[in-house]
Image (cartoon, rainbow, N blue to C red; front, side, top):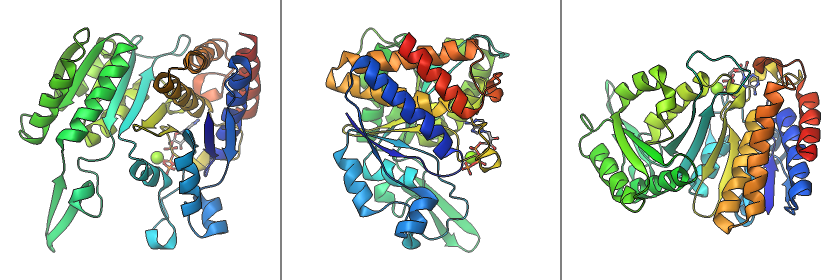
Length: 353
Ligand code: ATP
Ligand code: MG
């Protein structure tokens, strides 16, 4: 498996260095034959190539089996024509990474107020309310008069169907329970279609239990009893909001891994951003990116029918649980180690397991 590695800005270089060591250790232990191709994005690339992403980088990523993307500090970006492109948004669109898969779980040894839970939010990643230049490719906001804005939300049968299928397939590898989250009482046609397509796909998976909740009520249910849920499938904006809630409930933003997956490509990416306040201090928690890398290996293993990759993904997940329980972790999750030392201890644990 060939993976392009882009460390990005802020805490990206530190956490990606750990992630690369973990991938190499997993490759050794499970004989994965990983090939890591290191390149640059974010402000490094903007300085050197005049753009955060170049056509050559896109071609390289297209030809690879996967991408590990670090965070980009986009707050000062104004003009895409000046190369100030958000790489995350760019790759999601160019590679049609329609499923944003965001696990959230609690960890033994880490305090949480709600009891143990283990769920995954599967968020549609390509349409809905998220602004693009024209409605045909995603959605848009329009200034109708200086005082009136109209926001359009695109929902298509195809995108509903494919995100539903991603959710049900995932549920088959977990507790076989899918919860559809929507606002069909207000967005009757769009979310009506979303629910209809989720149930239609669900009929192909008779072993999977299906229920649905209106998004506002869902927020209350998640806060009250997150252990009721396994796989949650929803449209773009609801998934954005809901997955931040579930990540926070699970303990630390530094534990939130995510995968952006399409039919042919996938990109591992931490749920957090570049965290400039702690960059370069050797305190960032690398596990969010490490867990994202595990998701990428698991995705490849499932898609290609390669059990060694699935086993490697599981071993990394298990080692994160064990490392946190043993306190071999950064201070945000109760440990005493720095980023690099957390990585070294983790690699030893993974190789020894
Ligand atoms: P960006 O603008 O790139 O999104 P941000 O300032 O919003 O950056 P985030 O990365 O989204 O920062 O995180 C918010 C806060 O959570 C950070 O300021 C940081 O203190 C903390 N945080 C985020 N990621 C981690 C991590 N991996 N380890 C430890 N703390 C983290
Ligand atoms: Mg942020």
